[in-house]
Amino acid sequence: MARVRAFTLGERPELAKGVHRLLASLWPREMEYIHHDPVCGRHWGSLYRQFAEFQPVLCDARGAVIAAGFTIPLEWNGRVRDLPSGVDGALERGVRGRARSRPATTLSALLAAVAPDQQRRGHSARVIRAMRSIAARHGLRELIAPVRPTLKHRYPMTAMRRYMRWRRADGAPFDPWLRLHWRLGARFLSVAPRSMVVTGTVAQWETWTTMRFPESGRYVVRGALAPVTIDRRRNRGRYVEPNVWMLHPVRAPGR
Image (cartoon, rainbow, N blue to C red; front, side, top):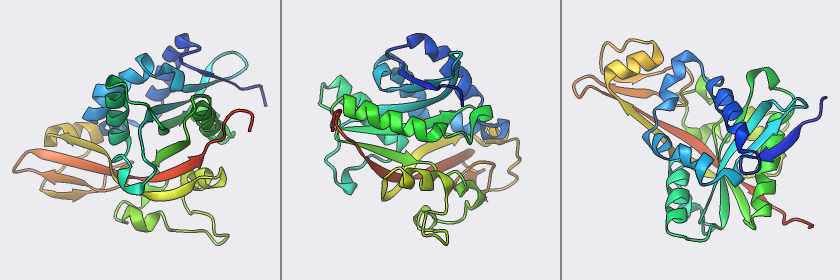
């Protein structure tokens, strides 16, 4: 395999354009709703501006971006009940903590992205290891991750609390993305029941999903981990995405 090099956006800010292109390639047209979480809309840009040194980027031998991770440092006391709500909560806590000059204790992952033509080559594991290295470099005691299980969209009616407990015959987690984190040494903490929340009008949801919603009710839409609730009387659709909190150990440099 050609040599893969890891940087941060703090070290190589010019890689941001390649990261933007990578993100644009990830989601199918019918998952446009994933881009309309208002918390991410408000704060995602700060990851490039204020937290660039916490964003790992993997490049191939030619210097092209092939994978990237997004993380944010935040304050967490180590107790499950003090975990953020998920991606939204981690973003808000990290941005608020930086604004108030509160010392971070923990690094929270937000997203790991691999270019579609580079998948199944071990890059996801490299991104996670890069996140752990960044946490250690900055003296943070652990890496937490609101993991979005890759096969959960096939079972949207199953509660996440049940899904995360599914196991293969060998005892490993059923879901490939949960399994990779587990094999890298992470342990399960809890469900993140409100990791992301997307709300829009019925017309917006029909545009985002390329579906029609003739009556109020719960609908299964492409890529969603749980049903979308449509209320035609209030002209509103709402999607609350659950994730799974996992905890990675972090070793200080030289240990």
